[in-house]
Length: 264
Ligand SMILES: Nc1ncnc2c1ncn2[C@@H]1O[C@H](COP(=O)(O)OP(=O)(O)OP(=O)(O)O)[C@@H](O)[C@H]1O
Ligand SMILES: [Mg+2]
Image (cartoon, rainbow, N blue to C red; front, side, top):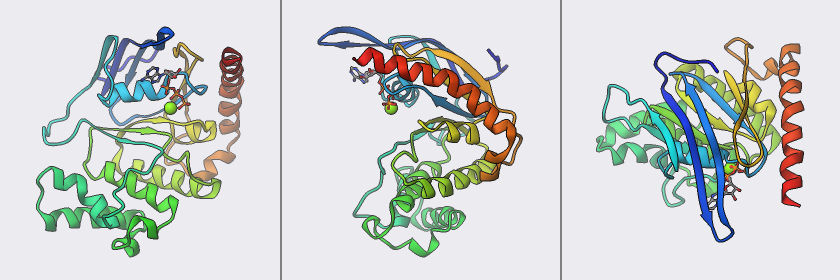
């Protein structure tokens, strides 16, 4: 396993055990992983293998049962350690697009003119300026999810945690947002932990792809994706892309089958 001298995120023998009516259940088992500053790490694995549980522990929304999990703070104590983007749009229906994007800054006590300026800058970057004063019900699903992502980015968190952020979108919109994420990541080089059910997405976006096993969720393998940067949708046409995809799919499909058998 690649060891980083000064990782941004460090997981050491992390376990998560849930107590349920049926007894205790290990959701995440013995996770040891370093994530470098500025790395884009994708995680794939069968449904129910513990991906979201790991992300929620990283976000501090869930305790670890044992082991150590930490995000290295940055130099600015005002910046949040993490921001999370879920599949469901996390936006206020009663606020306009720009008010939604600026909301996180309001929480940090930044003045209104400055908030709006920063939010406007982000809207510009993803072509949403025209919709700044629209309400969420007046914009498409793809735009809503862009707004959710901007809400997370505007706070400039130390790490960005994303749990199937494009999972609810149609295939075409998804491709557009994948390109956008690539572009934004090139500009910000933020440390990202990105959970997805799409292997194409994982290989396209990730510097590394972590493959998790069916429950109890363990790290089965970590694939280094050497496809160069910057990437675009055209990267998917490279022969090396198909090779990575095929290699990971071979093992992922076996885990998916195993997970389904366990449910029967
Ligand atoms: N609060 C909880 N209490 C008990 N069990 C839980 C709890 N949260 C999750 N689990 C169980 O832990 C396991 C891992 O769940 P998790 O949501 O992390 O999986 P996942 O990999 O994100 O799945 P999916 O791909 O379907 O989103 C599942 O078996 C789930 O039922
Ligand atoms: Mg999940």
